[in-house]
Length: 153
Image 1 (cartoon, rainbow, N blue to C red):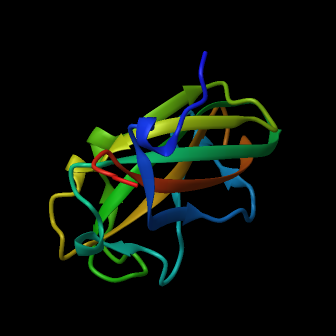
Image 2: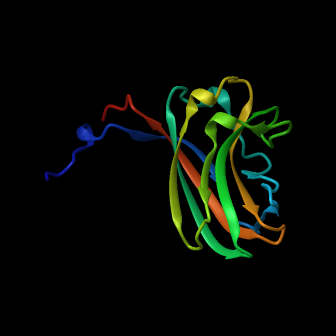
Image 3: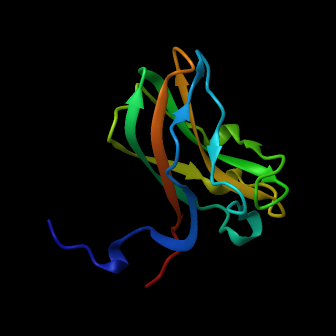
């Protein structure tokens, strides 16, 4: 096994990032997904600033969990009309789900940016939790970088 050089790497990260910062515990719904936690006010990314046709590498970090959540999902929310995400909604083609999430664990997902269809709208990562009851919670944060397969060092 040899050492990889920059020219051997097929993907490189660009400057555009998405983040769902750590904060309060993300609550589940009772047997359904609860309210999504997104990037927050003034932190959604304008579609025209993205490189379309690329991918997001999403890193989801979990912390403490309570009352046995049954699933956690990361997805891209879009069609926000402001940088605070007004009128934003989940883009179904971008959903990544992990059943029975573990505490203090790192999960890595891929989201295809071909789902970004309207470059005049704003987009955000979102984390949502499902549990047997509304008392199921997960402390979590997510960070993503746009991966560019056309990168040349």
